[in-house]
Image (tube, rainbow, N blue to C red):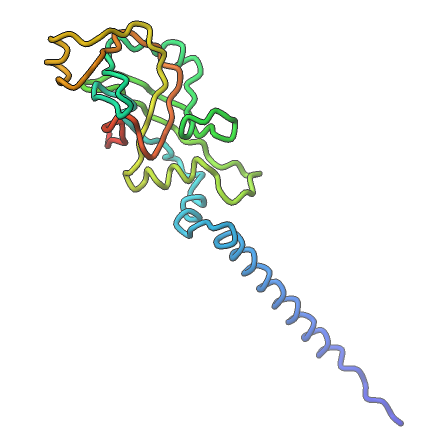
Length: 202
């Protein structure tokens, strides 16, 4: 019985189409895993793709003379010593101190009017990083919507019960005034202890 000749060109076309289809499926599956399987929103992924953008700096009032939510007292802004902190001006997320919690560094820290202010640079995602969430990008996304806050960790060097004059200045509800303190650490956080320690437009 005679056999039909093999159509090599047809086989090549079929194999090529199959390979292209597999490649399309694989790319779609990768996008699905990146955007959904890890529970990461498309808005976050867009922020992550902008992680190498030149402007990754946010400006915050990191503390002020306002009474904090923990009722520690009121801070005398003139008595804050930042010299040790500026030797290593690291910024953490939510006062967590692991390497994975480092999100940036302070580029400028200054006292002005009613508070201490900081320009904070958020670390860009390195090219080798393949995880679903780069924490500084997530923080940058929150701050891009003007809803971020800041918090400081201080060592109280000289704290006293508030005098009548200090209560008149800061408010009758205060118990103490921290006259001298040493700044140890700055964090970015969604809920700051000082109500007005938030992002500002500068």
